[in-house]
Length: 107
Image (cartoon, rainbow, N blue to C red; front, top):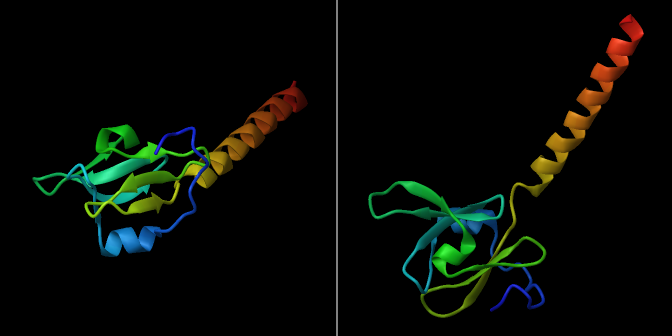
């Protein structure tokens, strides 16, 4: 699977990953996704965010993450964080406009 390929449809939900983490064909245990990165459980039981390529996965054009599990089946994980990033950006712009408008009004 290459990044340039057409995105494959989502076939795993965030809830399914949390209930049953996905063990990849490269031996990593994926427990979640976060803003285009995969969250893996380390051998010590901690969690670490990694770039998709570090665990043998590919970030698709639509932001989802495609990887193969230990049985060789393609799993497409959801993209998370995009909506909150857009929401934060919009509120930041509104705040900036309000600040500029407020300063002009008081001068």
